[in-house]
Amino acid sequence: MFVFIIRRLIQCVIVLLTVSLLCFILFQFAGDPVVNMAGKYATIEDIERVRSSLGLDKPFYVQYIRFIGNAAQGNFGMSYVSKMPTLELILERLPATVELAMTAMCIAFIAGVFLGVLVSLKPHSVFSRSIMALSLGGISIPTFLMGILLIMVFAVWLGVLPPFGRGETVNLGFWRSGLITVEGLKHIILPAMTLAMFQLAVLLRLTRGSMREILTEEYVVTAWAKGLPPLKVIFKHALRNALIPVITIAGLQIGEMIAFSIVTETIFQWPGMGNLLVRSIFETDNPVLVTYIMLAALIILAINLVVDILYAYLNPKIRYE
Amino acid sequence: MNKSFFKSKHWYNFRREPGAVIGSLIMVLFFLAAMFAPMIAPQNPYDLTEVSLEHFLLPPVWMENGQMPFVFGTDDQGRDIFSTILYGCRTSLIVGFGVLLLAGSAGVFLGMLSGYYGGRLDAFIMRAGDTVLCFSTSLLALFFLGIMGQRGVTMVIIAICISGWVRYARTMRGSTLGVKQEAYIMAARATGASDPTLLLKHLLPNALAPIFVVMAVDLAVVIGLEATLSFLGVGVPLTEPSLGMMIANGRDYVYTGMWWMVLFPAGALIMLVVGINLFADWLREELNPKISRKT
Figure 1 (tube, rainbow over the protein chains, first blue to last red):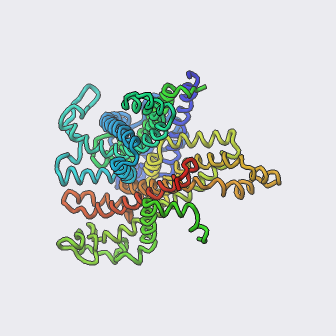
Figure 2 (cartoon, each protein chain N blue to C red):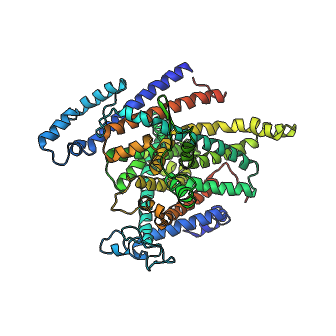
Figure 3 (tube, chains in turn orange, brown):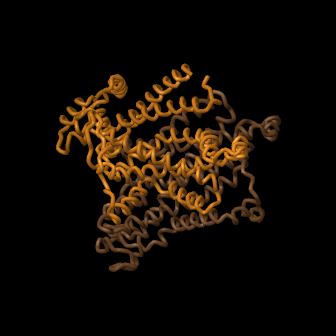
């Protein structure tokens, strides 16, 4: 197990280096940020001065090596636009994004697994069929559209929930939380539902499929036959085993979750990292972009590693050599 | 299409599954609408000589102030919503099939090599695939388009293909591993067929069936993703039609009660994706050898 973790950590470092190198190579083909930054009336000398002040006059590999060296010390450079350290800019917005994503993931996992179990027990009932039809809608409606439709219904027509922003937040040390005020909770409902809906449908379908297979297994039939209470059979015997593939997939969905949190944040003007990323794309604020990408890569790799380790504990059939 | 197709088990099962029939009818409807958009649409919304600002923000015809021929109303630039939807579906389907073709062929090729040769090559391709996939198709596409800063249909197709090939490669690898064991492959090898002949003529046609399921599911995903990217403003440029961009444009007018700019393109997008998913669900069950059908 220890060797396995070490090997995976080395792999993670290689992936991170590859990601950063690819970013740098792509930037060579992308537009020149200096022209934008120097302003409309800049002379050639001005442009050159800006270029050298940012270190962009150096050859490609020097820029890259310098970036890696600084990044290893937690310094990802300054934003071209706000002149602030990019890591600080992004981390400042981290709590908003994490709260949104965690709330969405909880909704998706609890509701998805619960409904999946219900549907798997009576697959041909009217209730199950309508849930499955709705879940088809859930996987077919793109997240951005789900957000807009929810805004139209709950904010514009019914007027019961706020359509944008994060509401009142409270500062808990370094963490600015919106989950402990009534206003904040009201504001998180729509974006969290938006972000959760797709995952909910995916998890529901997975749980249903996995449960239907497990329910035909002999040990489950035995458990029924010996007269165990239904709840015990369903949750202890069947669901526990049915959840193994579901958890693996849920862990692998983290990349998707980050992508869709970007979409959700733009729609609801949620003051998180995703919103910052989209703005930085339009401002060609490359340092912010790179920092975001590296941070996203780090989070995704870390979660994948944790899922792999959890998987070994959950499923005794798997042992990493 | 020959006679034997209509007598086949697949056609029999297909006719008896309402979801599959409805799904494919929707798909055919959209393909035809997209293909003949210039003939059906009352105006070409991207031809400035045909669009007039006089007709801006008109509601659908059945509402007060609605005007023919603007059945679904117009947007803030005076473009006919119905026509823009038709042209937008064109973009959706071009991107969809572009990705299917590009990612599909790359994935099938890599997956076949991976499954047939195994060893280091296999390990490398699959490892790379795992890594790319854990970043997710949508995130990679968004990052790529964000860095490149260029917009357009080709860019969107490339962006989605960065990780789009992996599912095809995995599926193809699996089915290649199965087919590889078959007697006819060994027979072909025994007769001295070269590797390219063996792979392309004997292995490929027999290992391809599961790829169609991946393609059907993928088409729905890619169309949704194109709309999402265009909605965010990193997809197709403003000068080209896209359902996602229509919804982005109409979004600000929702608060003033002008819902038609959002709901009609949204309805079209949802219908198209649901239709494809219905068909894909059926195809998955139909081509799954593990599930024996009752018929």
